[in-house]
Amino acid sequence: MNYPAASAIKEIWQKDPRTLAATWLDNRQAQWDVVALRRQCPCAECVDETSGARKLVPEQIAESVRPLVIRSVGRYAMAIEFSDGHRTGIYTYDLLRKLSQQ
Amino acid sequence: MSLLTRIFKKSPNPLPPPPPPREEAPKARPTAKTAGQHKPEQLGGQALSGVRQIIAVASGKGGVGKSTSAVNLAYCLIALGYKVGLLDADIYGPSLAIMTGVGNPEEMQGALVVPPIHQGIKMISVAMFASASSAQILRGPMAGNMIKQFLTNVAWGELDYLLIDYPPGTGDIQLTISQTASLAGAIMITSPQEIALADVRKAIAMFGTLKVPVLGIIETMSYFICDSCDKKHFIFTQGGGAKLAAEFALPLLGQIPLAAEITASSDEGKPLSLHRTSSPAAQAYRAAAEQCLSELGRLSQQNTAALGSFTLHWKQ
Image 1 (cartoon, rainbow over the protein chains, first blue to last red):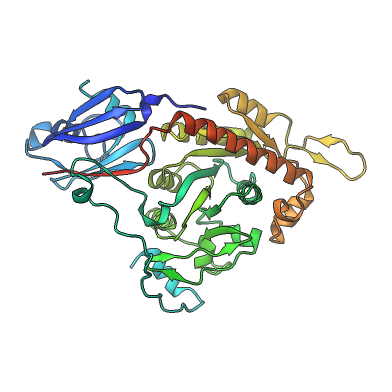
Image 2 (cartoon, each protein chain N blue to C red):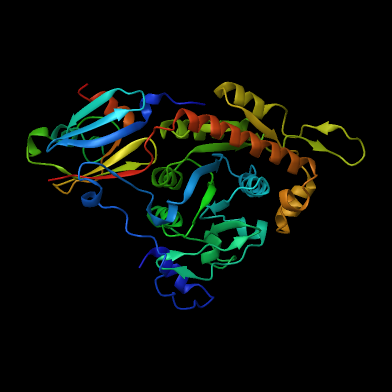
């Protein structure tokens, strides 16, 4: 069983103070605004697990929030530890693919 | 002190004091500063950095022969000339020690537990950190922690393949392993009957979600040949493994017969693939192991450019 190349990352880097960039395995480029990523955190604290409704209020997340560390999780996702102390979000590559600006 | 070290220190065999740090102790990983601030460092930690590929042996269903299969596959890989490790991740029902007769770890290398080596295979099991008769009573987070440390606090060293014998189910522990290690692939074990297939389907779906490629299916307890008639008796129905393989377009890696010698060899700690290599079951495992490797080879050719584990420190 093979998985589409979309679900793997070839390269990942910090493009500027608030932009994360990556190249997918199929060579598509991706960019994310890190503040937007924090506001779209998919964790159970930020999204209601049963209804899928967003519990997090985007306006309450400061524009100054930044990642501290970004770590791969298995081969399907990455976890981002943010400067506001939030660290439970696991961003799957499928989700990141949807959220990317390119 | 890590959980593993603490349990290790409490174990009945008193430990020699940890040796002084060795000259060749792994050097500090390049930090963001030395490696260039915006690029990620390759992770894996000291424990897994020398492991080429990690393979899950899983099922979803209990009692289908996962551990028997993991042990036999490990011996087949050793016989093929590879460096192999075997991690028994079944916290609540570890069976590696009984199946192989492996001893307990006896030394530490810095903060890492040195796994005992049995017939060339480095082995770790929760049973090594508790007496065989005492049940492991651990809540989810503790169990998850322990498994994580089997991956990060064990001196696995240089290995071609680290096989992980998964516990049954699709819960916390299975998720923790799949999140901690970057698995190269998973081998699914099933017996032929529908009640087993149903659980294996769920496990295949779990690996799908986690983007872990499934290498193929090994069917155990496929048939029984009795002493007097040489006829194959399909005790648990026929063709379940093949049906599942067709459903998911996966290779059927092998069909392992139901044989008293498999049970006996496991109970005696003398795995078939080591002691009775000419038996039909051992031959079937050998063929399955070879096919797994060719599947892995095919997959890694497709994914050579993919980034494995990484850590990216954000430049503020």
